Image (cartoon, rainbow, N blue to C red; front, side, top):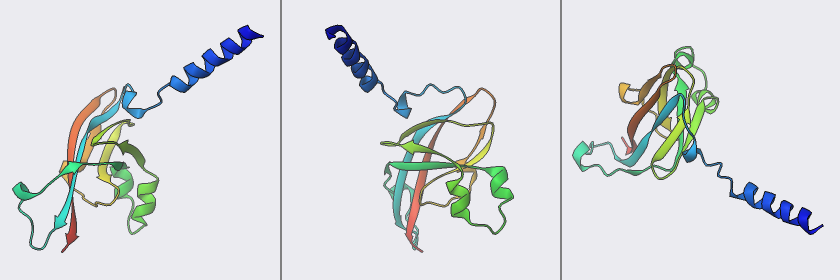
Length: 138
């Protein structure tokens, strides 16, 4: 009986100590990088050199560009919610992605530019850092 209890305790300790954190994920295809985030007035525009960015915490969405191009006048939030997303912690993220071209954006910033567009190719892991600025007034 003691032997079974010891085995059970050892199993439970091993199970509890398993780390399922995405930061330990070994990527075979996808992206790894950092996200800086800032917000402030856009009227007048704050000079880029005077903007303050901090490490972002939240979600980063990867919207397939082909889905966006076929989107039309649909509900963008619905499209975004169906897209892949990664958790960003203290500015760091990594995630597996399928082959394709993606528009990358955090939860509450809507930017459509080359700076936040990525192309994932078969068997490659991109290393890319992003900076997003949210306008609080126009």
